[in-house]
Image (cartoon, rainbow, N blue to C red; front, side):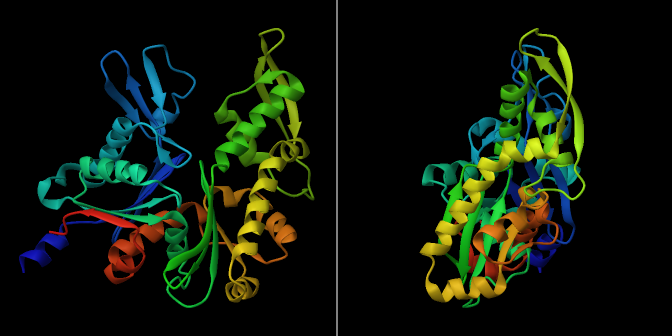
Length: 348
């Protein structure tokens, strides 16, 4: 009776702890938080000033004593203390005044496939310190497949390519496990860096990462567009040091990100070559599934399909797929038990 009463007031959560964004999915409520993984801190007082959306607005605009920190790099925690504070902020935001020792949540977190034991422990410890009573780690690609409602426990192959901000997870899944995989440290942020480098090299103009991301979203594409696009951008002229405006085209941005796309496609083909023939046959029939924010790059599915000679499908709402999968897993204990990587903490 008391366990049922406790459960009623305890909302367990699934978290997509991403390099670019953190999403929180609360059981029975859905995704309640989708904010940038950024923390603004006052270095003089060590005080947290802002977290998430408001902190991202400060990136590249802060005075010397304020720093906007991204605690995750390429999908891995690089600053444990800041990551802990960020998680605590998001968890307490979910619970608000109701957060206490008596309703600490169980948490499922999606993590990269190649996480080391030390890195896994960093994620677990950060979540426990932030208020979780039990932490489960699940591969992001697996969580994405569950979020897309694909048959991950059946004896048939599912190939997921989850393209996040800091990493791309390529995995062939069957019978509740990952058969063959590759974790790449190239993803959405790499596209942004490609654009910054291209504009500096071609036009001698320096732009910031937020503008690069905006360019990618507005006119970026992996294939030629039927209706070409252009965009006026402003940056600092590296010769004169003064502000300068130029116009860039979708063709130029496509050229900027081509090498990164080619690397992704090459790794997908390598995984296909190393996958057992029976599973490759399933993939040819069912196709490759794309998830993550990077899947939203226009024409990326067609570019991969053209090179791999296999149909490519973008899952519904790819940006939230991992968080949705984590939420499904926390509410389905038997499924979670089959596919979890590690778990730590108390179920009581």
